[in-house]
Length: 471
Image 1 (cartoon, rainbow, N blue to C red):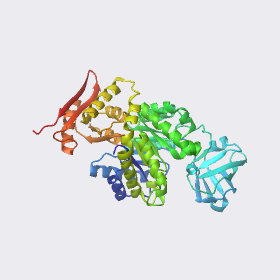
Image 2: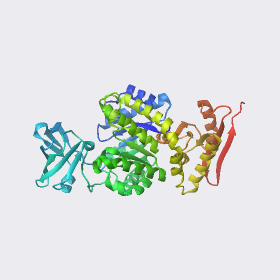
Image 3: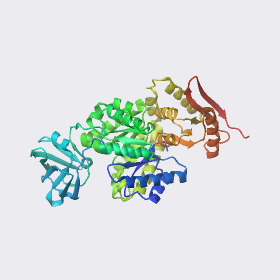
Image 4: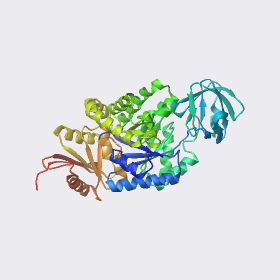
């Protein structure tokens, strides 16, 4: 498929057999949310994914999702059921009894410093809304429920319209980054990014530990991120539209508009873009999606996203495998019937913003292959040429051969790229082996016209067009 699938691992899917079936059903990458679980659990998930990858010979990207400068409520011994108009206390604490006591713990002092009477508090991806009516000192407040809702442990909480002044990385985040490095993750997602400097803080940390090859995914979910969108996209390796928190910081009717703005900006700047949250939310409880969810996913495909990410559907839902199968089914149909009609528009938009000679070369190679109906095979050491081709939204599959398994994994969640491994130490050897491997895999066969390239390199560039003939 052109558009890739990423799934979140959790209690519902943390079994090797389920994960294996999810990969067989079309998953290209897995996300592990460092907000939940423990390093022991995460290590087990990583070992399962790498074992499955070895078995099936298919590259699978691993994404570690940092908590970032987020506010979350603490641990509730019992969920709190609220009716509209009921009052609840919010206190500075790690844990509370919950239930009929109606006390919500929030462990971050910054929250109490920032909140004012009249503020609206939004929890759990917008399912819970509370209006602050009174403040008692620096560690307690009262709020009234604006909706009927259930408050559960560890759910995100935001003060509507406010971004808090918190460090980009907490001590926990730094520990989780070290874990991701030790476990050879391919990407790290940075939550609640506010400006490009947040990305640079994480990148500096990765460099300090010799892990520059881990990609950084910027999660767009705050008002500051929207205000600084172009700088953040330019500084990151990929972007994730976190619609849950985006919908907590903006009114719901604005979410679709900003989703489209983010997608267009990523395509313009040549960065992979992922859409996440509530794609198949109903499948947490039900075996089939709603009509509205099908339309939502189809719209995202039509807009030109690189990947779609399942979150709660596969981490805590009752039907994780069915959710993957449905997502693949919807995406496949949308690609055949909708995306094909939008290719010209998407490609034109992607190809008009060329600002360097390397991307111009990639455009020339791609359009040559498209115009003559050729197969396009690229040999890439670091994945740079492959990414340049993907940013142009190719109408044809781009087959990427590389001797670097991390490059394979990172490219596996990018638009239209199909990767495979070749053992080569230089570009000429790599391109020769790429062609042989492509024949072996059935990517090309006799009679096919094939364009081969390894991109633009000083002091020369290389491109070859050939027609495969029987030996």
